[in-house]
Amino acid sequence: MPYLYRCRQCRAESPVEHPDRADAEAEQEHHRDTIHGGLAPLGGDGVHRVHAQARGARILPRHSFAAALVMLALILANCWGR
Ligand SMILES: [Zn+2]
Image 1 (cartoon, protein in one colour):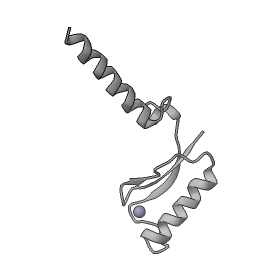
Image 2 (cartoon, rainbow, N blue to C red):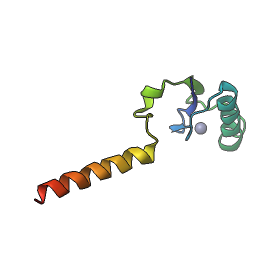
Image 3 (cartoon, rainbow, N blue to C red):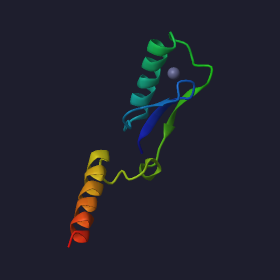
Image 4 (cartoon, rainbow, N blue to C red):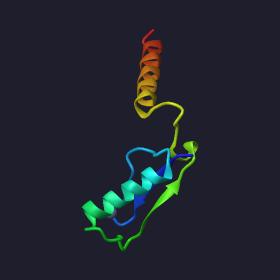
């Protein structure tokens, strides 16, 4: 089960899911050090376990999903042209 780090104060989230909780916690530490001067953000932050389905269609990588939509649009446009 993947993990994400979220900082509510910055309204920011890990750009990638971490397979291990320790990796997400390392990102949390790095974020606190670089953005918040080593302090815990007042708005709150934390490491959360996420389900693959919770973040949308993770069956396909993000760009593949967009490419599939473009292909579908092209196929439909081609059909309407006839
Ligand atoms: Zn932050």
